[in-house]
Image 1: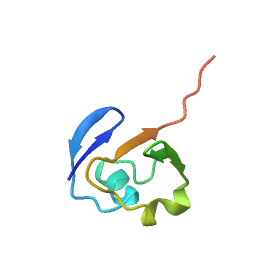
Image 2: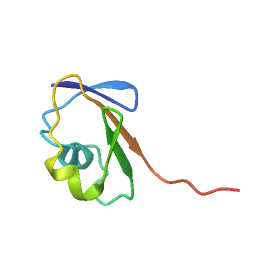
Image 3: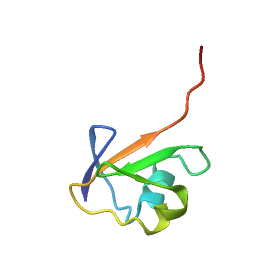
Image 4: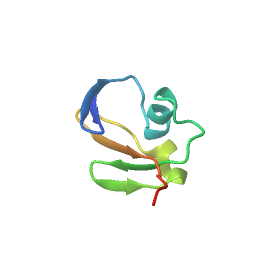
Length: 65
């Protein structure tokens, strides 16, 4: 299926948001996720099903001053 991740088109076979995060190398990373503009907590990523055309945002915290 084709989805958009952080504004870039991506082809994936991941069925859930959790699977997509693992596929992209974020398995152990502290990140925030959104699916079609709605925040998805870590505890719900495994049940957040992906569909063709979905828009996913994956954000990592930053530190700075």
